[in-house]
View (cartoon, rainbow, N blue to C red):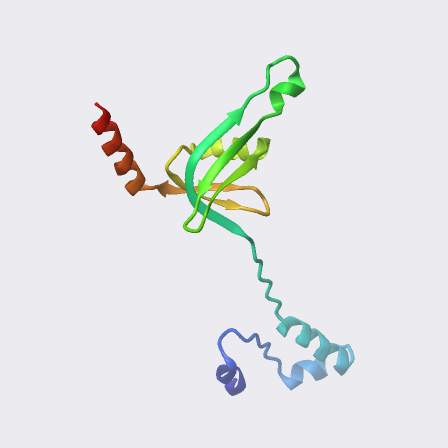
Length: 140
């Protein structure tokens, strides 16, 4: 117990008594191997690449509905502005559906998981909205 407390609370330990090992109907080596197997823990860390930024423009191209396959095929472009750059991304059907599900519009802050293509809406960019409101009121 002292050794377990000295290492850390995250370290897995299985307590067994000597009487347990000798009372089992299996070999001592097999009993120790099973106890050791219970104590071994595996930690898996997953690293994913995310892109976060402000949506500048969304452009979705819908094909003419001549066939059922054409209705399913959608394509588009997403202009995303980060602190370092402004970049245009090509969108597929899955990403377009994810944008519509999250109701993403211009001036929204989003994050894109590059491995899966999932898009999550983080919120609105307030400074940009105020700047546009000033420009609109100046035109009137």
